[in-house]
Image 1 (cartoon, rainbow, N blue to C red):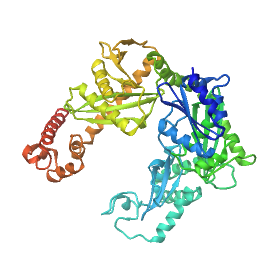
Image 2 (image 1 turned 180 degrees about the vertical axis):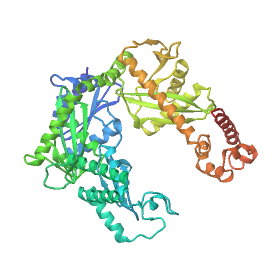
Image 3 (image 1 turned 45 degrees about the vertical axis):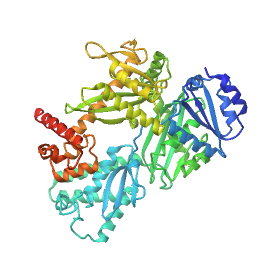
Image 4 (image 1 turned 135 degrees about the horizontal axis):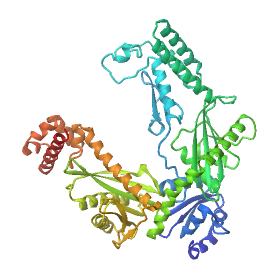
Amino acid sequence: MANMDKIKPKLELIPHLPGSYQYYDINGNIIYVGKAKDLKNRVSSYFNGKQTGKTKKLVEDIDDLRYIVTSSELESFLLEINLIKKYDPKYNILLRDDKSYPYIEYKRDPYPEVKISRYLNIKKKDNKHLFGPYVNAHAARKIVELINRLYPIKKCRNGKELCLYYHIHECLGYCCKEVDKETIDNMEKDILSFLNGNDQVIINKLKDKMNTYSSNLQFEEAQEMKEYLDYINIIMQKQKIDLPDLIDRDVINYTVQNGYLSIVIFFIRHGKLIGSKNEILLIEDDYIDDIETFISLFYEKHEIPKEILVPDELNDELLSGILNTKVLHISRGPKKKLLELAKDNSNIYLKNNFETINRKLKRTSGANDELSKLLGIDIHRIESFDNSHLFGNYAVSGMVVFKDGTESKNDYRKYKVSVDVNDDYNTMKEVAYRRYYRALIDKSPLPDLILVDGGKGQIHAINDVLDMLDLRDRIKVCGLVKNDKHMTNDLMDGNTLEVIPLDRTSNVFHYITRIQDEVHRFAITYHRQIRSKGSLSSILDNVEGIGAVRRKELLKKYGSIKKINEASIEDLSTIIPKDIAINLKSYLNDYLKSKETSK
């Protein structure tokens, strides 16, 4: 239960002012961040009356609270968002999907080019046009492919001679020929008109091409144009909606049922519905704050349209201030019908996916809760390490992160390790020190639990590092113990070295097995990526002490692995220190041997 001895005196002092409040667990970790127009009323509501579901679990974990008074509700919202991003609280709604949707990007710099881009990777200062988002990446690629087939825009990176595209009449030879500006202007006008919703431009061009191919008895090419035409007709028919204007807008609505929030976002661009975002989340009792927070975080990774329609319960003025765009309530007309349609879709999506979501929660956050009870600690973040040998002499290591039972791939880390491949203790020690020393310097989140794929040796390595950094009391360590068939069987407590038996049919067992499989996959994939690069530059990157400058000098003087390996230590020492030259020779010798063995 909440620590009311500590909390009650603070409740009496909270003012009736706007601000952000933060709840802490017994270990001093922020587990929830909220905002309020009236701090006293909002915070007091958590501790008055009966709570249910997610809110009940939150209140049980609260050991302390703090708050920051702000001058306005908008300022409290901004503060809340920044604190959520900084501390990643356990009970806040967070966007686990770090990917942004694809957009079609058109630019003329100096020649026209059309390609697929992810919103997070787009440089906003460039002079370009963006169209999207496209939830269906296949549809976006198909449209780009079609434009490139119909218009002779620049397609290659070759800057010296005419390429294949020129000879098959799909490029104007921008690399070598001067192209008439009027020709480019007309082509650009057509392309932008189509991407802005005028599909008739492309339909007419497809029909002309199809007729030309048919007249020339090029039936395969004519059939290809017909397939493109059918595709465009189907896509455009699906996208049509009844709106009197062509304003880019999103429509947001939701359904709440049994502690779940189902939220739907319609993306409408140039009068067409080009896709939607569906999400189901576990929420607390006062879910309006959660929805507004979700919307704010969503648009940090996606383009903000000129207009967003939301239901009346959401604070349109507050969201407008945060997103710097029009956020509107609608009471009638075609836009109201779109809001109702989004509501219907959120309800249908929740009904269709309720059982699936429930099963997933049992395997993820439910299994995480069971593991917390088993170990007697509150677990939000788990980090797990695995090592992989590289060419029989060097090693790499991977770290994966799970938050409340789900992979947090944005937090995964890769490490190149320079210790001997057979020295698993020092490999683990080096990686753990680098990870947690950096975390302390950057003040980044620390795990509640570290899982190592091994027994006493690896546990001691991690504990030695935690002792060195004074983190032993803050982070629990457990090892994954294998049976005589080299299969994970039990957990080993990192403090007592006691073996904790696991039921092989339990959610906990499947959970830690999933973590183990994921970290093994991640480390092996990293190992293979390095090995498959095969270039001298990437190979030199794996040698401790060789950075960009030394790598460049070695490449300039020798130019190949074989020649570097044939060089003497004394010769190499003119570019790099002698001890690094010795390591380099040893590494290359093992690398070349592994290449011969694999033939």
